[in-house]
Image (cartoon, rainbow, N blue to C red; front, side):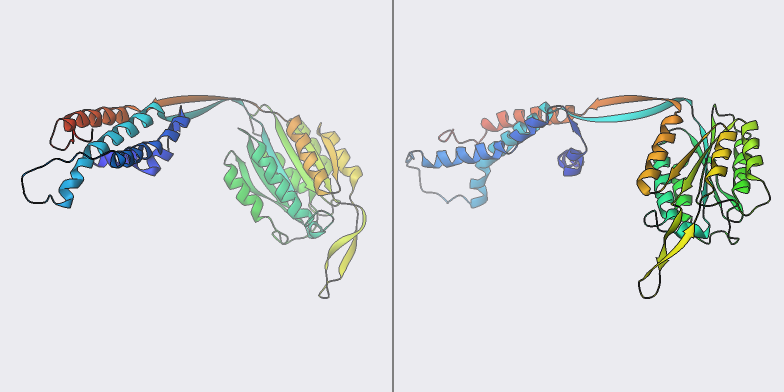
Length: 340
């Protein structure tokens, strides 16, 4: 009995894929047809039959004459569901090929609070870097944050949920020492990538200033990357000149002067067989990541296996069972030959 009611539950029916879903539109017609039949039966001329006096049948006894119609209605309903072919599909995904190892190095220094990218440089970089992570399939990605020092926040991993959490945790003041240690950041990224066996190893560095901290020369770090076969893409964030920084207590916008050392950023990318990009607004930064996404393609092939199981048989057997029960009831005391 539990199996019977489970077949009729909305959650069960909603969980199916239907080969002929339009047939389900016939289900509301079943009670409508029987309702119309009963209405027409009441309008037909009544035949008066003289019977011997006896006790008046009770109401529940009179209602038993509707049982055959209910049984026939269930038989038709189950037949419609069976004809609609309920199915369940299990899908299995397999991947083959070689991915790319990529380390993102993001500047979290105080100047990343500047608001020429909306809402500010760091927030824009985090959001668009997150979209870049979502676009990769089968690649291992890592994350390095830097200001006056550089730290590896996430090792090379395919756990993209973990990487997105680490990206979300980036904030101004995360690293106590302020400044822009580009050389140190590249050194940490190279250390992560140098033992990689991936067919391609890439570092993407985002910064909005000039290197003014750290103990490792940026150009030397780029040359080390080249020696280990690591390609370097550098992205310069923001505009030069006076740009909006924040607002004071009166709501007035304060401006600061900023300058990107574009020459050095180009040299770093050139030394490691990469490219330099300049992003002066959020749309430009998004397009830069889209270009890098096109340049660094993984050799990942996906294979989908679908196993479809037909589940119409229980509904068909119930339909046949109710149909046979209806035939049996037609030859019992529940049938009214004067109406049928």
